[in-house]
Image (cartoon, rainbow, N blue to C red):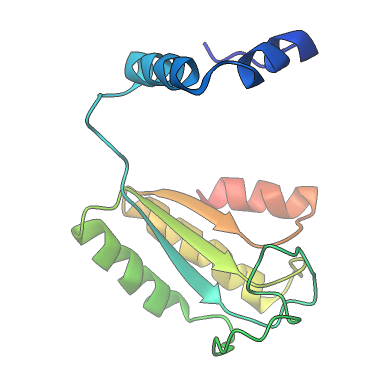
Amino acid sequence: MAKHNWTREEAEAIYNLPILDLMYKAATVHRTHHEAGEVQVCTLLSVKTGGCPEDCAYCPQAARYHTNVKVHKLLGVEEVLQKALEAKEAGSTRFCMGAAWREVRDNRDFDNVLEMVKGVSQMGMEVCCTLGMLTEAQAQKLKEAG
């Protein structure tokens, strides 16, 4: 079972391990739960690119950066589902969708994201989204969608 009640002293002990010891322990835990030579293939698609007003400093989607990335509004449901199908056929088992929003509004765009999530989930793939801040009700809707 994964441990979720770490003490500060336990976290510091891990942090202070010599790197090779840390790598050995990490590999041992990984092999306990996963096939040693197997990795999960995931695909990430930007379903809405650029123009986010938030400045997370690390994110190239922030409006303050001049990255020459072409801004585009939310992609259509069918286009996203086609990309997910292509990803699945190429070996991906998880499909992640990112949208450059500070926060999600309850509108047609969010309804479309819910349809995207349902469609990808129905393909038998794991689904994840990075959409910005959500309300608890929106998070519940995403969970119900898959």
